[in-house]
Length: 464
Ligand code: B12
Image 1 (cartoon, rainbow, N blue to C red):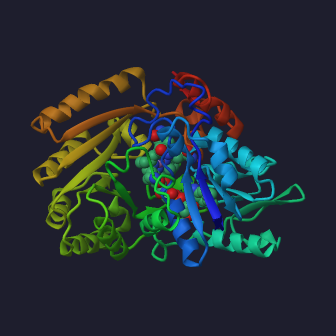
Image 2 (cartoon, protein in one colour):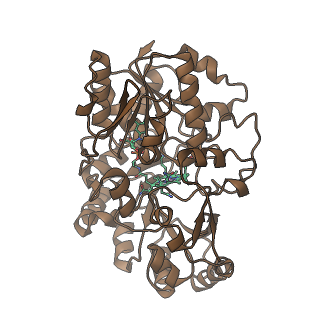
Image 3 (cartoon, protein in one colour):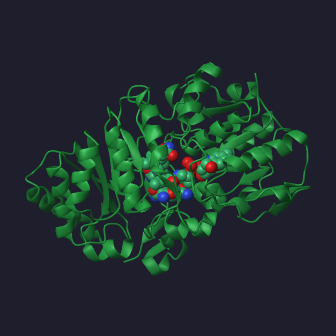
């Protein structure tokens, strides 16, 4: 079968099956293994959009196929593919090694087929990427659906005036061109984000259910996520998806929101194929109070069967949870506190209220019948000392005792690993925030992630 576009999601390190890694706790709080086999949900949106215009698009999660089958032959699989262009995912920087190796293999097997990179990390390192002889384009930015249609149409008609496509990094006669980041849409309603319709349809259309699986174990427990926004209102120092990072990396000055009505439609659709929890990504309060009221009222009218998981960036009062529970029969809450230290929380950005208010928030949630609360702490945030990291454990005890030792509270701690996020304030100004940075270029990160032990993968050290 001839495709118009094939997405490839590489493992973090290629080939992880040959060189065993002591990856440590670098992926402890996400559904993936250290291979980071989950692909970014946005590639399903791109696929969905392109298929609306009659293109045939396939997603191959190579990382997951390699993980699920020790004998899965990558080169054999790639050799057989007939497509007009390949898209290689470099969204998360831990894929710095695998994505480059896959691109190299693709060019060896299909020298005439264009190779296009995309994702937040590809956007950040686009100038370095375009220098590789086996990469032809980098599509930059957080919203590339429409731009990819423009580019694929151009490739089809063999026109080479790439200057016309916003956000594109390209090359002609080995000379790179960098088009400005001018396409930054301010809402997400004309897209399917994520493209669950596409994903399900593609299984039947292209007769393969293994290739597009999002991660190992998804079939047993088909968790889904919905994206309320692209961009962020928060300024967390360590986040490569903060307000400042989106401005610098994607030219985004404000949030692009998905409307409550569209989110409600998305939930209806998911309920048709999955009974597992639906994660609502980002704090819905980013949309403002009216957005929240409208969303809750739509949820209330719906016969919600799935559990819905909400994220909170800051303190919320009791009324919020009363309304939430009134609208959603079964819900859970995720809170990233990072630290017990009020001053450090204030510096870093998340939950910059007092510890008393943190405990109040938790008690409100528990009172209003939530199913579960996940609380996340981190080791390695700016200003944190060894002792301060240890003190988080005592704070968990304080919380537990102040919340009647409620068994619905779950505590997680993970290191800031493996890398400082590119474009985050901490990455851009490491010394100011107490870090010694070891990695600068993409090549530095590529070498780091392939180290045999996680201790040597880390791209930073905290200064005392
Ligand atoms: C939701 C989220 C997750 C979800 C992922 C859900 C999913 N499958 O996409 C979960 C919780 C699982 C997760 C995990 C991780 N995350 Co995360 N995540 C986010 C978050 C909060 C939102 C992402 C978002 O808004 N995406 C929307 C847009 C930007 O992306 P998208 O629609 O998927 O893709 C669009 C473009 O990026 C582009 N694109 C993407 N890929 C490609 C490929 C091609 C070929 C093309 C053309 C275009 C293209 O086009 C798409 C649509 O137009 C951000 C923070 C933030 N506010 O941004 C962090 C963030 C992206 N995550 C980050 C990190 C580090 C991770 C982890 C590595 C953490 C860890 N050590 O475990 C893991 C990796 C998981 C894996 N691969 O297995 C960093 C990334 C920094 C970097 N540049 O590397 C961020 C910025 C901040 C952070 N620290 O959390 N994450």
